[in-house]
Each structure stands twice: as structure tokens, then as C-alpha cells.
Length: 96
Image (cartoon, rainbow, N blue to C red; front, side, top):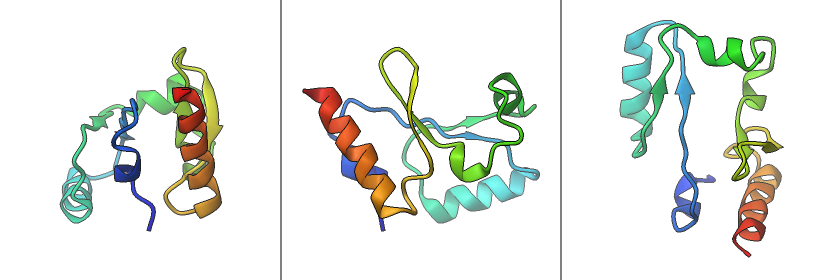
């Protein structure tokens, strides 16, 4: 399984923005996933509204931003090896 820990030496920050229907769902997920980085709990679901992403498939709500906050890669990398390699290669190129 792919893991964000694979890029822990990269100058990259991961900030999940979450808006679960029930707070207990979030608590259960955090316990199960043992997330070791901060997350932003969007209590009013404003992130999707502001970025006009309400109708975007959840798997495409994961993206990599460049130093200027421009989206450069879109898609959930942890479930797809090909996309995970693209994320890692993009990060590697950014360091050079």
C-alpha cells in the first residue's frame, strides 16, 4: 500500500480537509488510520464551495500544489500505483 510516509523527507506538507457528516465518523477514521499529520476540519464545508468542487468526484479532490498554490497533479494517489508514482516523480523534479 502506498503511504505519505514515503515522501517524508520531501519539503511537502499534507493537509487533509475533511467534512464528515458525523463527528463520530471522523473520530473513528482518525483512530483507524492513525494519521500523524494535521488536518483541517471544515465545519461548514466551505472548502468545496469556495473552490467550486462540490460536484467533483471525491477521488479527484486530492491534488498536489506547486510553490505558487497552482494545482499540478489531480487524483487520489494512495489507491493507484501509477498516480502515486506521478506524485513522487513530480515532487522529485520540484526538488531539482
